[in-house]
Length: 393
Image (cartoon, rainbow, N blue to C red; front, side, top):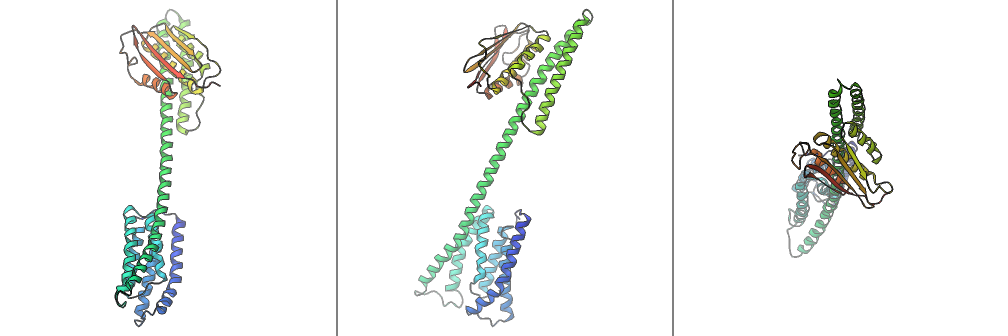
């Protein structure tokens, strides 16, 4: 039988209750049996049987929460021994109510239904034992109405205990479901955070490596004829790599500790992004009309920055100049347009040799309730996004 995990204090409480029951029930059993006229001519044998019955009920009480199935079986064994030894029901039978409650509240699904059957069947067995068992004189028209009343009362009492346990079981299941839902929501939030960090990592590393590669190639070609240009390129590589390393460390810290978000790029950081692209040798023209009114929401600023970062990185890898960026800040939305000629023929939906960049840009747009389209138009490639602004602060 499966044992339920219990805390130490719960085990101690159940054992103490069982010992208290045992201490009180033994003398009560002797007194009640004598008062009810149960023949005690058996002497020691009767005392031993009565003691065994009390011990079995006490054992059922002790394990009722640890193993409801075992407690139910032990309680039935005690009741059967009580009837086969010809003993009358007494106060020790009160343990049955606690066992039925535990079977309904803490038992498995099978034990739950066995407890229900035990409540209904136990009432019937007890009634038949009292009015049709040995020494009862058997059922008659005079006693059948009383027997029916006793059966109804016994059924009500036993079912009351089982129903109380069933209500507690429902409350426990509801609490467990609520906790499971909270854990699932926490896991989903953590997964979304990991995806966000992975997306940021991709944007930072991809953009920085594209700038570094472009500068390294330029420095290699210019090193012989223009050492100053090579030195400037190496400086750009150094600053870009340091900035990327700082961003990566920040993202890894967030991933490791799951704390509040670190500083995120805003519109003020766009000029630095443009400068990095221009320093990599790509001709870039930026047109902002109309200008933003007030301060757009932080989520929109981050989405604009990351989409532009990915689009310009793709232009560095696969396009030729000039790259034209248009930003239109309307009261309710911002429209973003990035277009550049393609150096070679590239599939319309896969300019970067992989779909991760485009998927990331679309996800960023959808995250703030916007939309994004990207594809070839004529001999160029266009990234076009519309992001709702809502209220600006």
